[in-house]
Image (tube, rainbow, N blue to C red):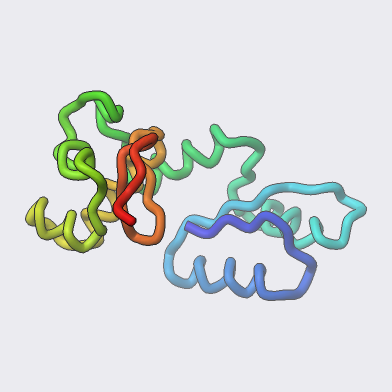
Length: 137
């Protein structure tokens, strides 16, 4: 997924969006004032088919489209996701989570992203922790 927040008519953001499309990624753009040069690229992307992002709900909806629905009981206090149990003790790296879950790293990242979207966990520097509980130092 590629999200473009500001872009002129030419520049790196539009190049990134084009590369994302080439890779089959969903392209989203935040619309802006029609008279601002830094909004023109986003507005053109939307005109050409990019999904507009008007608020956080639009972004979460798009994340759900890409990642799948969030776990049913993804909260930091309880729930059925084993990631919560694994990171509750102080945090784990994404690599360690993949090993502990017995799944490939991209699958672990996908699952952590879903939990992040619900606010149950955070991922800072590749260390996943339950929200409100600091990770290892």
